[in-house]
Image 1 (cartoon, rainbow, N blue to C red):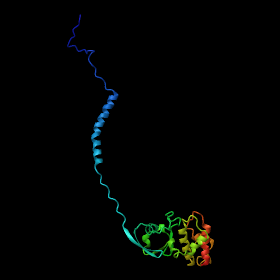
Image 2 (cartoon, rainbow, N blue to C red):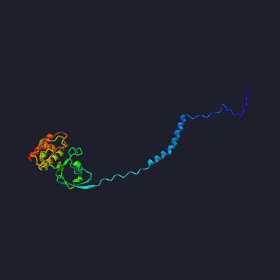
Image 3 (cartoon, rainbow, N blue to C red):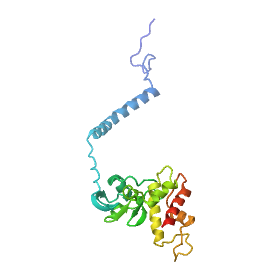
Image 4 (cartoon, rainbow, N blue to C red):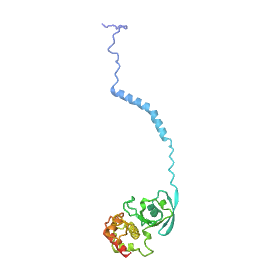
Length: 233
């Protein structure tokens, strides 16, 4: 005999579906989708901003050129240079006199030695504009035409160079050294600074040439060359 189900009964039927609890994976998927939707307008705004052409900064203005007049090896030059151009670069790059060598470019090796207004200097440590109107002698100006100077001849006779890279500076320094000695200039090893030594000793020459480095180690022959010229003076 079948039983009639009371429609007003408060009992829950076992056949009534129960709400399923959301899984952890589905929750994470929903959260990721919501985050993507939220970030989409911001990403679009960023892309739109990147696509807009940026205003490029104007290039820095070039340093103005100024005329520098030099008498180099007895020949007049007028060079258009920046104020920061060293005398060494002016000689090599603008006057085309590459005999003067760039060694350390810090005033430590002496390869760039030239004679400026009668004084030997490291041309890498001075600006060309500082010598405007002055005279400069480089290794190209030591010879008289095809006739080598006495110190150049002595370097050859005494084999005072090997690779030759430091030789232009050595020659200019030795040339000025001989003039300084004849003028009575003392050195750090001169016994009596009030009187010129009767002759250039090896110690005098080494001290006076100490600003010029020879990486080949031809120092004894350099001393001999300078001493030979000084003895004839």
